[in-house]
Structure formats: C-alpha cells, structure tokens
Length: 397
Image 1 (cartoon, rainbow, N blue to C red):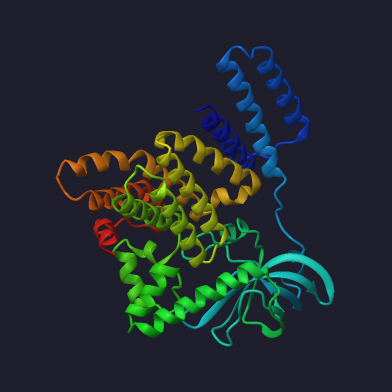
Image 2: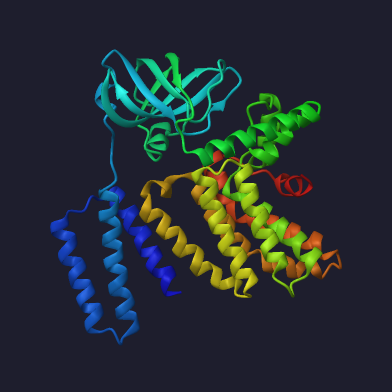
C-alpha cells in the first residue's frame, strides 16, 4: 500500500499546485527537510513514509507549475486574419454538418511557430490524419461557457488555447504523421466502411459506433436516445468501455480455456490491445488499455486486490508525465472503472453464482456492473444524468 500513498501524494500535490502556485524558494528547503527527517528516522515506517509523501506532494505542486499555460499562437488571437500551416495530429471528427480538426502549427504568416489549434470546418472535403494544411482565418479564444460546460478549460487541459472557425483551407500535402498511426487509422476507416456497406441503417452506423467508436454517421435523434437510456458510453471508446469489454473478454476466455493454463490471460490481453488498435490508439485509449492490462495481470497472478497498488501507481506516473490529464474525463473514467472491476466485481460474482446462473453470464454481468456503478458519480457529475435502465441495456448490448 506504500505505493498507493506515494502516488496519491504526488497527485494531490499536482492538484494543490493548480490552485496555489509554489515557488522553488519555499518548496526546495521543505522537500530537503522532509527527506532529511525521513532518512534520520528511517526505521520508523510512518515517519519515513510521511516524509517521502510530503516531498512528493511538493514535487507534484512544482511539476504543475512547469505546465505551459499558453502557446505561441495566443498572441495572434483577435489580431485579424492569419495564415497557419500545420499538420492534422488527431483523427478528424465529423459531425452532421461540420468537422473538427486538431492541427499542430508549424508556421504562422510564414514564420516558424509551435502550438496546437482547433479548427471547425465544413463536413466536406474530407481531411485525414497527417494532412498538411494551410488554414487562413481569424484566431479566437475558446468560449469559456458552452451550455454550462467550461469549454476553455477543457481545451486547455489538452494543450489547446486557440480556435479558428470555417477558415479557407488549402491542402499542401499528406502523410505527415507517424506511419504506424496512419496505418491504424486507415485500417479503422476501412473496417467502418465495411460495416456500413454490409449492414442496413441504422444498424451499420451503430456497429461503427459500438465497435470502432466512429459516431459521425449516427443520427442525432438516435444518439439522444442512447444518452437518455444511459448507454451513450457504448458509442465512445472510453475507459468505461474498455473496462466492460475487458471484463466480458475475460469471462469468455475463462469459459473457453479455463484458468489452469495462461491461454485465457494471453487471449484476453491480445484481444484487448487488438480492440485498442481498432479504436484508433488515441492517448486516452492507450491509457485505458494500460490500466486494464494491469488489472488483467493482477487477476492472472491471483492477486487481484494488489492490482489497486499497480493501477494507482501507474495513474500517478501518467499524471506526473502530463498533469493536465488529471482533469480529463476519459482518464477519470478509466481509473474509476478499473477500480470498480477490482473492488466491486468479486462481490457481484459471488452473489451471482448463488443464483445458479451460468458462470459466463454471471461474470460478464458482474464485470459490467462493477465498472458502471464505480463510474456513476462521475457520469452524473459531468453529464448531468443517471439512467436506471443503463445497466441492463449495456449488458444486452
């Protein structure tokens, strides 16, 4: 449990640093004093652990202080029309009549620059990951309030501080992104097109959403029904989605191969990461896959409860590398969903087996129930609703 306390101290320090900036002149002497006391009384475990926790808390606050609070594009906001050349660094997100692009800027008005820009443009023409574009328009600051949601803070957590709406766009090249990701996104879209061609609507668009997280073809009215039923998470590859998929995969693999050989673990792990590839291997998907993989390994070695230590420590390392993810909903859902698998699922499995139902059904339902119940408070907080039919609907889906 020591790693849990150490990881928690680091995360609390990062949160503390986001509200109360800390200077080196205060932090460094305090860190040195805490470590000196811990070393001096190292045989006293509570003092040793407490001293290291204090040092890590202050290190976390300093780490947040090193996070950039803007980029080189911000001075151009509200300064009239500018021409920015940049690369599409995330998979474009089409909507009913528009497309969202995330560009890594290389030049602005012919001068080298660095920064990330959100561009909202028309649905057509279609742009792809790795396209080199020149966008010409006015830079704007993201709106602070969007239907009660702090959109500016949300974008800032992803390192985006400026937007451009419906600019003139000229494609200057393609294939500028890393080749592995280009191959993954290309394969994902081919899979989506195959599903759309082989199924009638709305089944085709639903299959694209549930299996691949491609939601742009789902009618708005149908998406609203999913949201109202509490099953909208099925249409987005989130941490909750990955946890549910992993739980069901594990149940099926155990049913097919048993627990005596490692086959069930290797099959589940391979299928999970294969699914992550199909989902596009975005940073949020990879973080979720890493945490779920740690849970699977803990379950495999028979120390499922010890998985809490590994997952908490891994989460702390992720936050230390990129403190802004602490405020990202996808990260919070991933962490709480995996905790649900560890803390809640065993009890639900025990109760379910008392009913005499088939083990594969009991385990699948228990994993889904554990992940969903653990994330309910976050879903209610961020999305403003909790649906009582969400659990059975998720299981049936």
